[in-house]
Length: 292
Image (cartoon, rainbow, N blue to C red; front, side):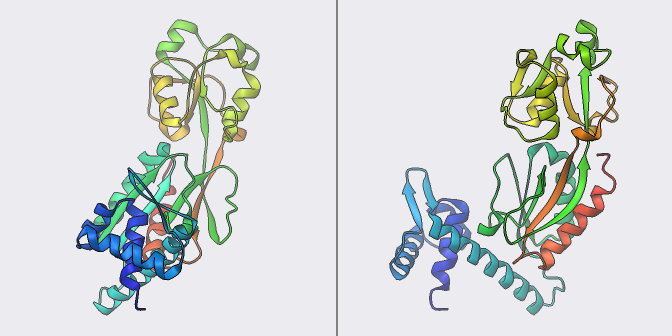
């Protein structure tokens, strides 16, 4: 392909968002990066990027190019590994995404994976944003809630994340605990600031507790955890985080309706590559020991 260098350049710009970042990765001058982008856009007759003060953002056409380039980059990495006689071909970049609250479970797996495969560079992207596998934004996504239904994705069940309704000792000392559901309305709660949050335990809490009793609200589960441990109110924490903590009291028996399933999601184009299969196997193996 005559313009593969230009495509690789565009891929790195789309991935990193800046000309300087792409130039560093590719080992070329930033002027070369700009020349490649301009030439490729002229050749294709479309704008691949929106230029702005902070860098470059891929257009829809640029995202399509990113998806193709990511798959091709991975395939070249596999080929290079086989040519060099390195067996499995587990090289290059591995991008995994999940909610930040799962980091204590996922990070040890990624560290162990990198230790076993030193040719791999790991990027672990956390947050509520849905990273698009079809555009090459990640190799593996760990998602919670309803079954992901994006086209061309391979979805596998991983675990059920059970939730416990808990209060910290400091809250209990000040306010006591409810004897049953009827007394929930007399207590203070930590909850999600988005009334449309889809997690089953969030929906249950909004149904059972008046809005005015949610005295501390935030947007992510990690901040919810910190507020509960700080004594701001009663709230939900993953069961695996509650285990082993003597300073937390479960205020109601745990219910299955609070649990959220976890899913492993990959794109069909990359699902069977050695790198993706290897990390999937390690995540599944580790999940068997999680106290979810």
